Image (tube, rainbow, N blue to C red):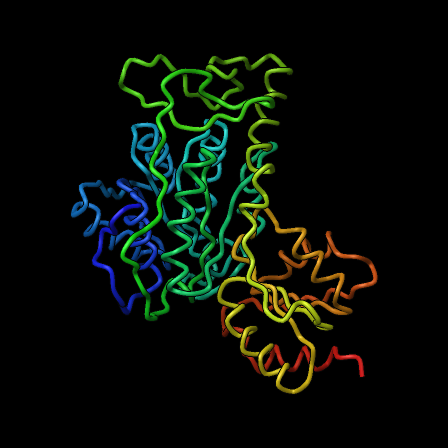
Length: 380
């Protein structure tokens, strides 16, 4: 148990501010980033607050340098994070692969905006779902969390750091412009459960298919460790021409996340036990869905809602269970259907999966729009 870095109590914060305070409460001591809308307030807040808790905040020349610095600081012993939006997230992808391959715990906040390219830099979108999963190359797994409130920007940032430390992996927070800039009441508890970094003082220092390594080697204390993005054995020595070493390494990197799917899966269920029309949503979109499902129930419609707080690894079991109990499932999202594809993949054929899509950042889904779609699909 750790005391929070800010006095416990009730605050009225912006989502980006809550993210920073959650990181500090989790023990983050290093931030590196480059300014980009709509994540700017994260860098601004860390530039003020990080020094107050004995940490370091730095603005670098671009997002490539920022994620590289985060990886280096993590190996230097500091819990570390960066924040960006779609264009910067694209630039980070090669080094996110390095963090995966070198088993570097860190947190990457992607405050999504309308793309592709520069797009609409101040508008809300949810178009980076597949980029978070598949943006870097090669076989790999990733963890990505999706907050839908200012409170969850605080809470899920703490959880992201804990996952990163426990699994020695980068964790992505897939926020969006609306949640990042929303101002809401937030409660900071007296104590925060945050995992301390576990030091690994003897090898093996890296995972393989038959051994998942817990803990992080402390550099600068006499340990001779090679940290590389090339194929390496459990001691860190390069074995870039050995197919068996590569197979063992990559399968180990995947297994440490796949083996923790039950712990990583985090969904919120509402009226899903007896629903006929289900709705699967995440992030800012889910706020309108919650109200629509309540209204539908009041009108006698058996509607249910599954909200994804963890998007990757995809919570297949929970999604499949909802789809098996519903004749129709709606998937609203502010893109052209990225989570819809995953829902479709795990759904029984007899269930209708209907995408509801908005792009362009003009406005969010309203409860009335979702309710209208639910009523259209009711079997009478």
